[in-house]
Length: 92
Image (tube, rainbow, N blue to C red; front, side, top):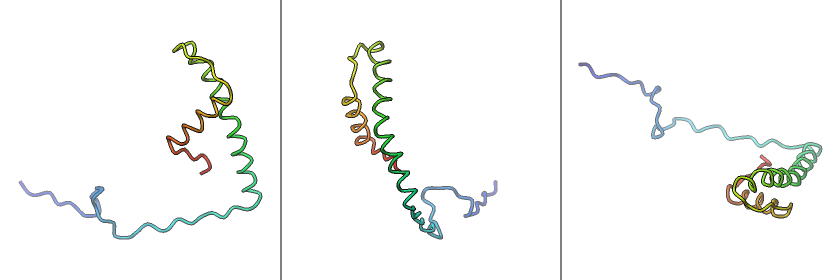
């Protein structure tokens, strides 16, 4: 039996050495209008995401697990805690 010839270009491995480094990523410069839109959208998302969580929690959890219902501030606390724990950054 003959040994199999493997070309270096076709080896897929995490240990393979890359010949050229990847090009540097260019940062996109935002205009004032785009930055303003992003700030408004992020603010609206930060206000509405606890409301969505509140309604979902109060609809599912009491009937399924017998847990108490929650208010807006507790829902906001859960959203903030989940962002801290899971390092969620929705502004990307």
